[in-house]
Image 1 (cartoon, protein in one colour):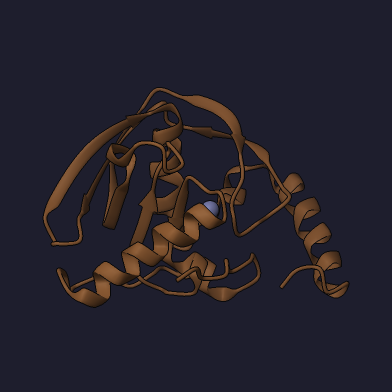
Image 2 (image 1 turned 135 degrees about the vertical axis):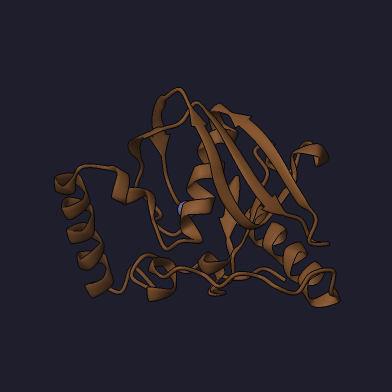
Length: 171
Ligand SMILES: [Zn+2]
């Protein structure tokens, strides 16, 4: 099933999600399937559970956009364990549609997480994957990418969003 994407302004996006303690259940497998489906429908390369209204430490990533099954990653209870180098590039978020900003991230980022069975894994990603590891893991701690842009840009963005909310163009 395809879930609608929760937009900026909903408190679920700005609270730390709960740690997942139950693995290898039919409910979790179904939820992960729905997360991938929702992410592909929204044309994203990553999706965190709070973005579909669930405050759980679960994210999915596929930087190939469904082209390469090896790129499908399930991140449960992820933590960033290493950040090396630096990259600056345009970044957006499905929960803040219509906006993109230059965001500085690590060039190579190592994440440690659990899979659907609860097995721990660790992977180092570069470039887009490194950016996705940081972006999605931060979602699970209630942190949005706009915390990584200047306060002035962030304020301007928030003002535009408030206008859209009042006009009923943001729900
Ligand atoms: Zn996002």
